[in-house]
Image (cartoon, rainbow, N blue to C red; front, top):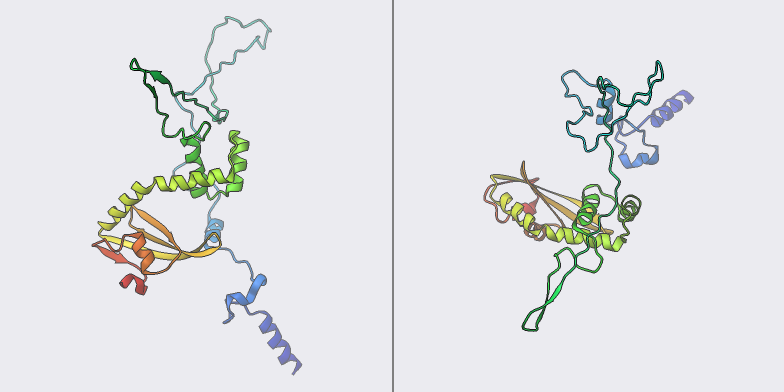
Length: 263
């Protein structure tokens, strides 16, 4: 009786989601960590370059930005002065480094000129100069890249701008830059939508995601060359109509069979 009870307890302790019908959520924080497929493949690989794989190394360039010549001062044998001595050969080593990073400030002066008729006319400022002091297109493009592509938080980006660029930019200013950058892609987005609409086959998919603490749905329409994403607070036909691809296309729609695609 005691041995049967002990065997039962040992069997129960050894159960997990891989050898029983235990749901994954039941394991909680005691879930054993197993290596992922990527980790298992990495462990099986040998360290270093594999046979046939293209090598990657830092190679010298033919036209460096700066050349600094180092001249020996005296002979290491007799200690005679080597100024004006014959140069037998040279050996070069190149350092690949970042230049000193700082903001480049351009001041635009709009002149007012008086005509012979007495009327005064002022020149126009460039479109990027929207205020007496404002961030230029390079800073704005960097903000969009760091946020959208590198997923950098706005708070962290303000620190990076100050530490690396010496550029003071508030979270609100950076948010505005990204929002304006999104609006500037309207023509590009329309072009992608039209190209998808004329494609022979388009793959559609959707997934949930949180935006500002609320559940939204992210929709995608893609081919081998183009992908269009849209985030919408609703699921179903309304969101698909806003994405604007499946309603105008004449090719094959590849999807998971969700009934909203059938409409």
